[in-house]
Image (tube, rainbow, N blue to C red; front, side):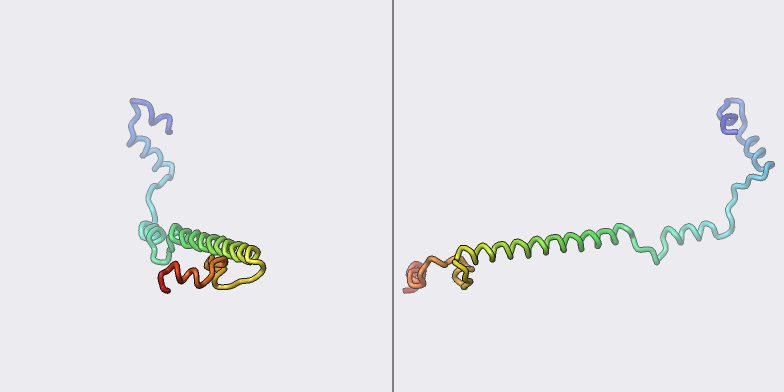
Length: 110
C-alpha cells in the first residue's frame, strides 16, 4: 500500500477507504490525550536533569574536599619534617627562622 501511494495516479482517499474496509482504525480511545499529557507534564515527575545535576554536584564536592584534605596533610607533614619534628605557631606561619625581636623591629613597633 505504501508503494501504491507513491504512484502519481493513486488516490489517497481510496487507500484510506481500503484500510477502513479491512478494519484498520486510526481513532484513539476516550481520554487518551489527557493520559498522555498527564504522563508528560505530571506533577509527580522530577526532572532528570535537575536530579542529575544534584548528583554530579555532590560527587564534585566530595572530590574537592578529599583533595583539599590530602593537600593540607601533605603541607603539615612537610612543615613537621622541615622544622625538625615540631609544630609551633611560627612554623605554621612560616616565621621559624626569624627572631621575635627582629620581627618587631622590622614592623617598626620598637
